[in-house]
Image (cartoon, rainbow, N blue to C red; front, side, top):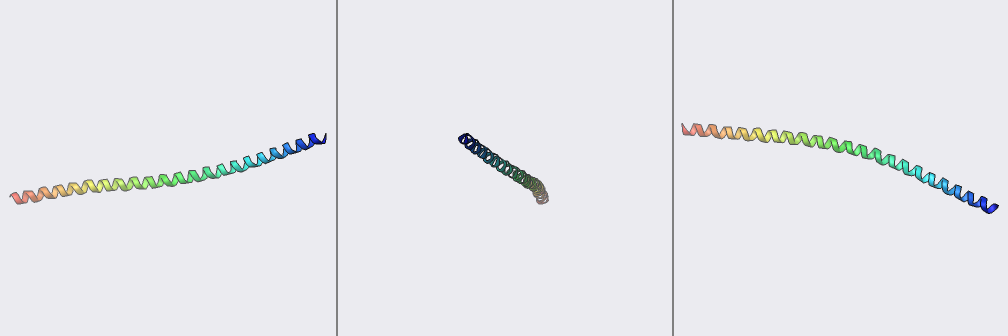
Amino acid sequence: MEDKNEILAKIEGLKELFEEKFDVNDADHEKILAQTTKTNGNVSELQNWRNQIMGAYKLLLFFGLSNIIILVIFIYRELVK
């Protein structure tokens, strides 16, 4: 009978060990998920900044080129007179 009780005690010990490992694993997953969510938020903010900068650059480039073309046309007309 003692052998059976020893085996049951070992099985119970293994069960507790597995439960402890699963609890630690769940806690680690929660930490990883929280960090991933935070990181994704930071990346989104950086992408928004990048999009704003690129939009401003495109507007500056467009209006800058437009002004150069207008200036060249004006100078050409003044020279042709």
